[in-house]
Image (cartoon, rainbow, N blue to C red):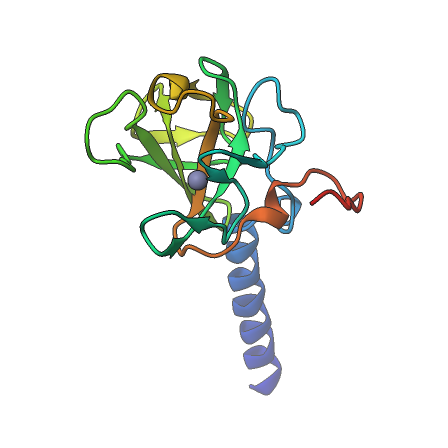
Length: 175
Ligand SMILES: [Zn+2]
């Protein structure tokens, strides 16, 4: 019976769509990330200081490499929040030398995967909600005196996360 087949097909298609809807709720698609650090409501990015610049792709002295993340300004000891909802995993270490800021965590979910380093997370595993307290900023001034303290935010695929950090739909011309 063709009519029945069509109905069966339609119900199958709608089931698949419903499932995708659940995995990627539309209200989270294309949305910007939440505030990451207390005291920095617009996820302001570190400019340049004597250690380097905080933008994606900035050159890194000595290594001949480019900056693979973005540095979000965050004062030492500040509260850090989850930029989106997801699953935590870690620890993620950037320096691998056990210095005072060699800690971090990865969040995977909502269609994103990022590593947040130079922070101490409350925990390394489990689920976290967008905007929920994630941890605190580590004492970066102890390791790099005079630097603009910041959280290094790096996409797991090392793509540029800059556009996701800027809140709202307003066009900003800040460099
Ligand atoms: Zn960085």
